[in-house]
Image (tube, rainbow over all chains, first blue to last red; front, side, top):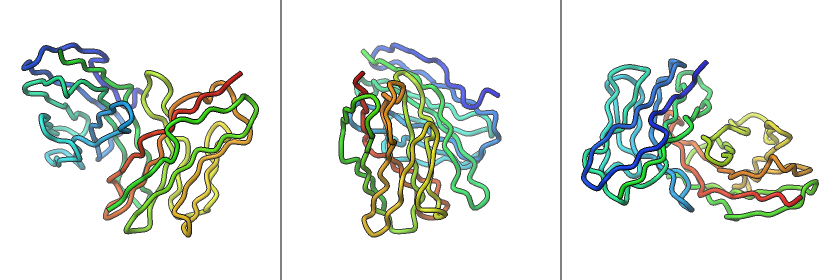
Length: 115
Length: 114
């Protein structure tokens, strides 16, 4: 059982370049999300989705786009990378059906450096 | 609105001694509370969760946490630290409609001295 899979694990970009971080889950979870983790800041929510065709902004959405065409996939796009986007990015998913608030399942992270 | 405050950014204990990681929260609704652990260069893993059942929650690897509504706290404890417990720990609150919006604390790094 793969769980949440993120690619790539490492990426170096130059300022102004674009790229997409891929995220896929095989647990049929309705909810998927992207977080960034910076030292001393904890995890901050970038964008999230509660189902195919539905996305919404989190705490720090500027500079990032997302789409959700299938239940399984939730890519994160950087259209014009900036050094401030140097961070570790985590994709996470959970079930939001039923009364249980559920557990967030995390990918192993993607470390992005923007020069 | 909801928020989480982890009172210590870094805690250092000797192997075999108790661990206490402190977390206070605020929430407009009845919260769900979680502790996650992150080992170096890894994703986050759920340690335990409180969802309005028993106030003393037992998790994996001997950790437990007690929900205290009067103190708005959810401190994480373990009777005896092991070297493998060295990691960063995050307290997380979920509240509001749907309870799927989570707010993370800034983390507490636990060091275990041999």
